[in-house]
Length: 220
Image (cartoon, rainbow, N blue to C red; front, side, top):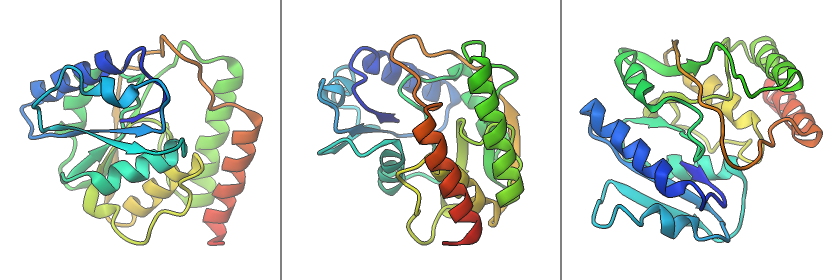
């Protein structure tokens, strides 16, 4: 769980994820990556989990961005499967079991949503362009490349990921994993963010992601 200045909701998010994971009957851990928060996010994440060794916090000394937080979480993870769940959750956690049920021999279980009611027409257009670019440039066809996916950890092993400062990291992870096994998709119920601000459709981020997807395609 990458988290930056999520003090308003981090305790509730951690509690909800732990409850959902317990309900699956699986063996699990939750690694919260506090990405240089200034509001005590890391400490609050553990407030209600004292003594629960399944919940850990890894801290960045400065804000490094969600991609670096994901890479830190992956490096810290000890399980066979890895899922990125943002601190705002963005999904109905009862659907975690859907991911687990679809694992089989897959390298990735890719979640997708039929609709996102809080998305503007602009954000929908950005999502379509991103999905199309990932398919055309990288040959990875999933409905929501930047959404919540379950990865088999050994399918992600290899050289360090290059695009940890870009949203292209999601595509890089999907591409690598797709060379080690199948990608299967599972429909997930989307839950809109109720606090904070979405930043994924900024022009600067769009341009950077487009550039990095092209670099990933060309191997430069």
